Amino acid sequence: MAFNFFKWLLRARDAPEAVTVEDMFDLFTDCYIRELAFQSCVNLTANAVSKCEIKTFLGGKEVRDREYYLWNLSPNQNQTSAAFWHKLVDRLYRERTALVVENGGKLYVADGFSRREYALYDDVFSQVAVGDFTFRRTFTASEVLFFELAAQDARVVVDGLYESYAKLIAYGMKGYQRSRGEKGVLELDTNAAGDVRFKETFEEIRNAGFRKFASAESAVLPMWKGMRYTALGSKTYNADTTRDIRAMIDDVTDFTARAYGIPACLLNGTVQNVDSAADQFLTFCVDPLADALQEEINRKRNGLEGLRRGDFVQFDTGRIKHIDLLDAAGSIDKLVSSGVECVNDIRALLGQPLICEDWAWKHFITKNYAEIEKVLAEMGVGKGV
Image (cartoon, rainbow, N blue to C red):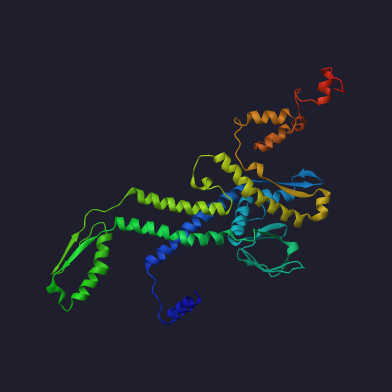
């Protein structure tokens, strides 16, 4: 492997190899297929995170003050919370790390930074860039929010898997191109082959003339004396060929989704078992990510003393799934009648405005629920039974 690499370097230095337009087109196609699968996973995850309500607590009580406003409405003057979380998740999945800095009471996702790691001291971040602005100062780990995914970069694994799978996609595309191509036989007179200019004329027709003739909708092919062209018949195009290519591209999306813990049916449009897939997506992809974000925010912005006072933030992932009011009517009745939730708790879960009345915050319970001792006493059953 090393010998071939250095041999390639020497060849590249001495005799550069030309790159055709077709080669560049194939390269861009490969990049687009991979980027489509990756961006689909990132957008789905970012959409889920941006739908979370980040609840803020002070002294153990839920409050909506400046901290709530930063995380749920506007982290800075140029972004909404949805744009902020989309950028953070994209950076986190693309680079495996994401850095959030605070400046002037506002939060910004860094576009670039340099990190110097220490074992027993705070890491130091320098050259922190946000857009076209670069901070001159350095930041310590305690001053920033630094998010990091698992030790293994899933995107590297997916790219490595795609390298081998891309050969199948390329083979399918070339097979489709061959089935749609123009093929024929060129007959040459032996007397014409002896002409001095024959080679030059033949190369011109083969390289330029036939290619333009085969690809054009309407064209005329000039022929020289001693040449006769005969088409080999109709094209062998089959509609199943494009379906095979589409299926292979869907396979790329499937194993990319698997790498990030996302059920493939949520990306490829399959409508079967969507509810079960959504639950798996929330359990194995969104909830772990939300926990990691929540832990970093709490330990940096509140710390141990804040936790003791009851100051913390909490990601409410229950807001992600759409709830149909009529479909959930039975469940809502049970939640209220059992005293588990009050009316305003249910309205908040449904995304409806709260009722500014005292009774809306009270918990109700039907007479169907009672303490076991009271039920036994009313039935005349002694305590010793």
